[in-house]
Figure (cartoon, helix red, strand yellow):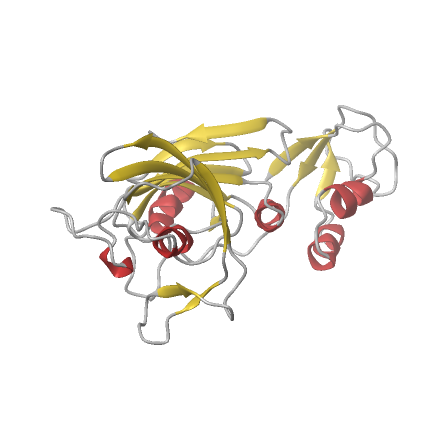
Length: 278
């Protein structure tokens, strides 16, 4: 399924899985029982034996296939791919994943078409983008990657940058919005800043100013539903066209929010990955 080259002298497989990757007990147990890890020549690896730097480990195990029905042909742009993950550019107006059985033209349905065409059966998104938001989406290609990337999202080591044009001009060039977000009791899909809501932190930087608006780059520290939209509206500067959050209507009757950059230290290849969507 994938290979890994040992980076640390004397590291054992037990340490790699439990300490470096911090996998849960269940998945570690499943890997052990399946004898899923072998050396380059195919011999079973001894879990507590110190390994030399450069040792190639092979991971081969059966995982439950993802449930997304593939479309006939993948029509989303793939910006990056390796044996552990891929990063796609989700178009505006497309949902990240299905919400019911009839929802079969989402980003993940297109991703699954690409995965199946290349002999795979597993793909799970690591985070989400609103239907009206376009841009970069990280997808794990096996359960170990999904577990590690999920933790990286929680620990804020995957940097997600967005661009938006907001109404008016923010008074400061940079700032941090630390306001909890919860559901609006009076509207099914709206979210609001609420003391009883979930912890939410947004960093912003003004990169261009116009007479009645400005372009901001936004970095998410948390990933709440509609977080950027809610936080910018809370400041009195909603994203232009985002009428759900009291912005003025545009000719297209829509708003523009773009996930422009994903950046992280790759847990398997140890490369620094920076992908930019244009």
